[in-house]
Image (cartoon, rainbow, N blue to C red; front, side):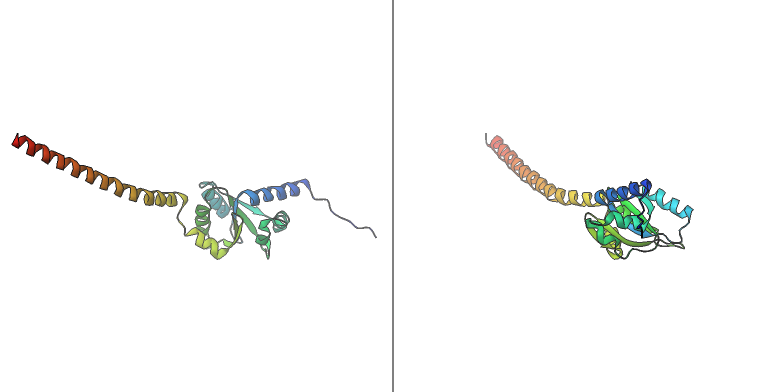
Length: 179
């Protein structure tokens, strides 16, 4: 009895390589888009493009093949239903906030899981991630916390220098009166 094996089509091999590259170089959030129409998908993609993030519908089997043998393998465990992959190598917090904005409404998407900087995240963890401030807000907070003590030091030094100058002025005035 002959055993038949299918040779994968070139397009499928390319898609698997693309997914492997995305998993290796980007933060990824997987969603279920069941019930979202073409117009809704276009809105999601346009909103995500504004923050340098992509959103692509993928086949679970191709994602499983691409993730097998990598650190992202846990992402594909128990994967079922329709799957779309959000990926970015920019600000994953902004991406999480944006995609969660589409999880409410008449045709909501559902967050399945994520893969961020080598760590598999649950839907709940992605929700928590979205509550963190954006990259710009975090940088501003850090700079503000660095600037506050320096401003205090400058104020103290200014005050001390002012006291020295005031004392010298008083001494000069006193000497001028006695001379």
